[in-house]
Length: 188
Image (cartoon, rainbow, N blue to C red; front, side):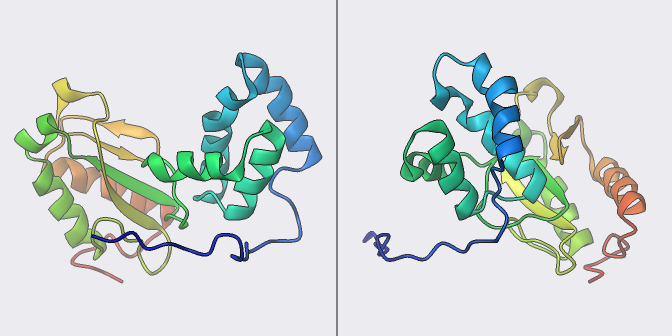
């Protein structure tokens, strides 16, 4: 397998007119996040979590701004974003459904849960519905092996799932979003 290199020195970063890290946001990060860590770099993941939650991804412009704020390189921010499944460069749906695929969840039937979500939403793992409302991801251990199989629906953990249980979760989410993509096979 060969590594495909990208011309990073000449790559253009899409920019919006308003910065992600405004002066007000940087002031709040300084007081509420950076102050809790021995080094500025320690604040990287909590800041990335905030950006990911707000924008459903971590835009390249935001990474450059965060790097400048924390006095680290943009490469260090990008390395973190691309290492952890929590973060993504592509926008996820308003509701991200993450099904645990650890050994405990695998043994307890996680595949049936994934298959049901795929069937209901009409998407594959790693995809987002056409309306941008849902993303399905497979996640590594969610730390709840004793209640496997489990899934995160945004940040809410659902334990001891069955196919009927994931149907109830999807029905609840769909009622809250008014989405038609939860009605049956694909729906969008």
